[in-house]
Amino acid sequence: MKRIGIISDTHGYLEDIDLVLAATAEQDIDMWLHAGDLGDDARYMQEHTDVPVYAVRGNNDRVQPLEPREQLIPLEDTYIYMTHGHDVSYSNQSGDLIHLGRAMGAHLIVAGHTHRHDAVRVGKILFVNPGSLSLPRDKSGGSFAVVTYDEGQFDVEFIYKQEII
Image (tube, rainbow, N blue to C red; front, side, top):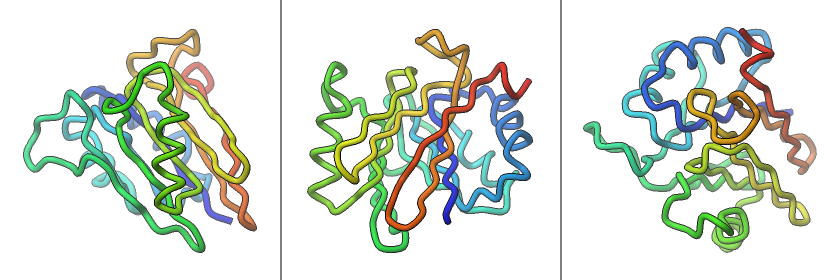
């Protein structure tokens, strides 16, 4: 089983990254994904964890060196497609990105940008937006996600800021 931590839209609030890493320290996370609007947040995260951190550039990211706009990350027998999500329709973000990810052979699609946590399953494909722990625009109070991959199946759990402070 693989465990994938997903965070997005931290906007320089490094104390929130510290909270997330502390809260998941005993969970055997295999990799972290940062879906953009991070400034140097993903690099900060990599300095404070021993697992790989993959990141994409968000619409507010201008720090050198720039992260890629999208990534296709191999995971066992499938792929993870990650982008910030600002280049697709805000109202149909999950649908547009599921279409793109499916075309690339990905079964986990990850995006941020909306600051609203969301999960949509279409067959074996799972779309996850972890929301924003730092500046949420939903009523979650802030969130991130942990996705598990086991025997060809992705499952998601959202973890809320009030649960870890």
